[in-house]
Length: 499
Image (cartoon, rainbow, N blue to C red; front, side, top):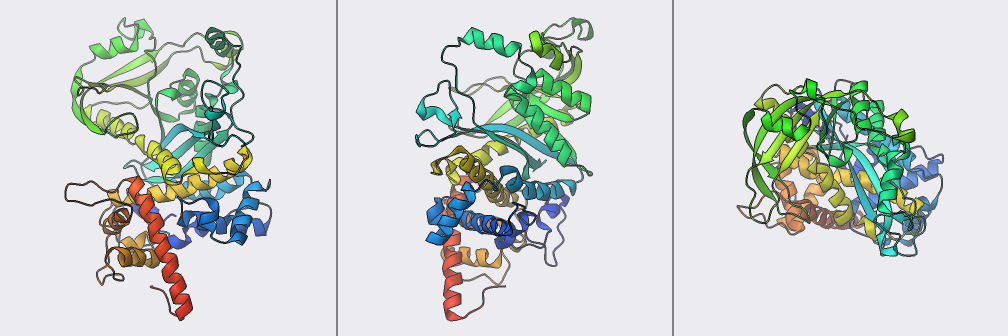
């Protein structure tokens, strides 16, 4: 687990209980999460755990600053350069720990898939990278990372279940746009980059059993016929946003030939308020949307050449949920989602549940922001793609931990802080914010997380929301500087730490 067990406290939320009930103090979470690491060398196993601990305590710092000493810095560089440090071996114990967390949940678990481009274009001497734009230009080079991350239905991250990191082949400068379209039309799905969605689906379900009901949630890029048909045939639940206005089987859809046409004729079930988080391109806002639902028979698209063999020619039946905003604010694009799912949606409440699940997809985008802006993984100077893949894998796990603590405080604000954070961490926060040690009344997780946020610049005024991830990870780094200072002071003085 990612947190510490309850002491004489009964947690009523079954989802949260499975997250915090492991009996592991947070300063020890790295050792617990990597307890099954097998790199083929016991000394290498210990070095990975030590390096992960150092980086987790100072996620914004470069390797040399986080490691502090020349010996630890040199050992970290050797770790990332060692061919025995395989990315799947690094990830394996975390996936196993994630599986245990997921399988303790009775109910729905959202397996959210998404792709992120990690740019190393400002490091032109780094070898083994590939294009992440439309050209082979040096400033558009990096790695591609595709993940499936498990979340509770309330949006708390549980961990990674599938991860793929690769460098693209060089872009053909001679191939015209139409030639590329023609080439892709005849290419089987397992030879395309878009196969990542199917691989993520397969790995997720191979690694999780138990009582948890998994549903893959993904954005428009996943709206691929081969992905939909594989999920349907294997009985894997999905909730994806439609990318195109798919053709229908008219005789099974009241003579409607296209999806949008059929949804326009569907009865209005009601209106709902949807929270749209901000990003670099849009401001955070709320949208009032109209909800319609229709069961549709999708017609198989035409496949050519070798692609015919890998694509089902039979139609599939899905439930389509229309989420349409009537009037967007000036300068904003109106919300117009069509969500496709294999689940039956029989009423307005059921449709709203699926819309809320899709809204939790923004959690994986926040995780990517944690990695890029919080952990600053794009600033790493390891100078080779293989080293960077190992580094990204390790920081992916650290990023989940940071986000887990912040999101758990939002979902369970009254949870005792001692169930998730160690006494050392809580003490360090109070020393910085109140110039005092841990208070006599045990603080709540929300109180401590807000204090951590204040160390990172969150003002905490009456009308302010909970600390954002930027403020939180800045505060996390500041907190650990104090943890280390207090620990060193006690060692010098021969004093014991808090319990």
